[in-house]
Image 1 (cartoon, rainbow, N blue to C red):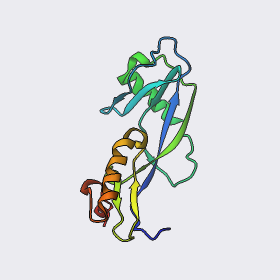
Image 2: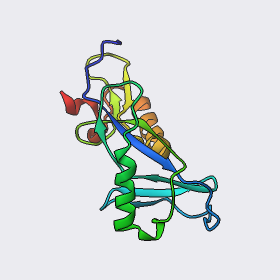
Image 3: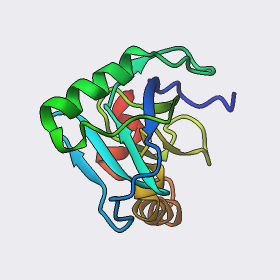
Image 4: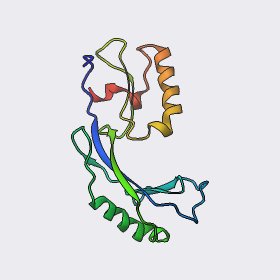
Length: 158
């Protein structure tokens, strides 16, 4: 809408699930992400937030919940985190993560529109990376349009 170059951003659905309260849960537990098997969990309130790390590209909108993802989560827990096999699911939902084709963020000046600056494609990591992303964006903004961070520059999609 601003006339900036169209950058290939892909909306991908991901499901999250919440367990009921667990008496044995310690809320100070860390975020646990098994990146080899694409599954994670962390304390959430008095229960756990769990994710099977599903990723399905869909058109923008309200993403429908896919019941098979809860089954996938149960399979992954049974195989890779059997100590959590007795944990039930109280509720679940689906949301979108916006990803770039190379999986890296877009942070930098648009090559075509003067004064247009991109911070996009954070893939659901916006909250956890906001401090570093903000610091890099500020450095680039203060440096002017000539200042670039090559790994994150929108120029890589020219």
